[in-house]
Length: 115
Image 1 (cartoon, rainbow, N blue to C red):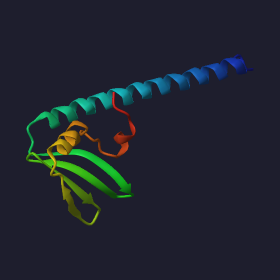
Image 2: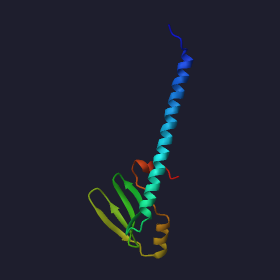
Image 3: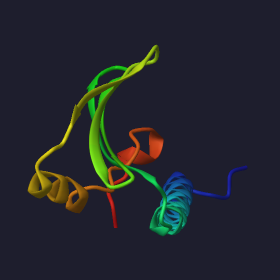
Image 4: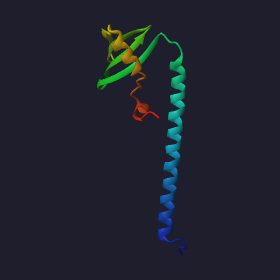
């Protein structure tokens, strides 16, 4: 003999699913903030090499703008090689690239927008 109605079971399943989705969203949000804080701490140090931006061209091929000891360099990156495409000579262009920098990596966490 069945004591629970189908409506009650459907509502129970719906709210259980909603609770799991809310918990998953909260976990991913917290993970994103934690990674952002850890990344900022790591990048705030005076490192001689900083990746300013990554522009994805094709699958596993990208242009990467890098600040190396105060010089801005554009690199072509493939799985087989890394080639210098150009060195940014104009100071105003280099400053603009530094200002717009802090490009994120494209992996899983590149899908999340910044907070």
